[in-house]
Length: 245
Image 1 (cartoon, rainbow, N blue to C red):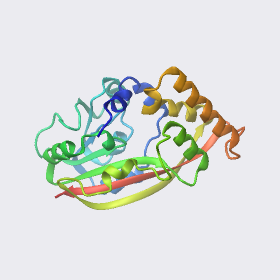
Image 2 (image 1 turned 90 degrees about the horizontal axis):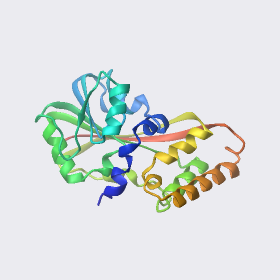
Image 3 (image 1 turned 135 degrees about the vertical axis):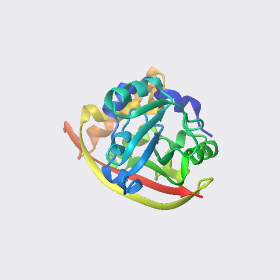
Image 4 (image 1 turned 180 degrees about the horizontal axis):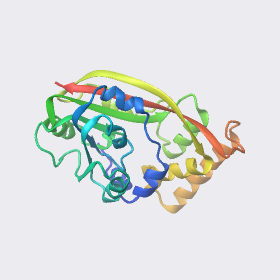
């Protein structure tokens, strides 16, 4: 069951989301679109973090996103993309109008069965669905520790991608890739990044202050981050590629 409060918490933070959230490696787009297609739809596009990777791989790129704040940023950053107001359960697109639908860092917020039916409607018969998530590298102890500050219910493994770990209704899993990459990020921006996650956004100010303090403690106590203004942050990006069933 999707928590609507958490799911809607991003609706007012378009500019901060674009500035502080990580992008995605080009290899993730390559795994989904190894060749040029006519039309690609990025669903739950946010500010266009993944949308921008589709420009070189599709003649027409359509971004679908329900948040006005996110769409405003996407339109400013990616004026070449067609940005449409819509959600996963009802896209403003014709039947069989897309060769590829991508969903990056968003599928776990969808009503899975309803969204799958809508994606299948929009896809051409030979179309592909690509689901993408960034997650913490379990070998990076300080990033995992920070993740648990904001997501205390998370266990030893990140289960965000579990919505893609089984066959989706109407789709067949054709491939999965795990891409390792890293970014250099300032300590200040890394801490601000955590202020764009849903659990922080829905917390009251006391809860937020507690989270900020605990994040600082993690970075101060770890030998890889203590007294460093710039951090080397590893990521893992999971990519799942489906065809219509």
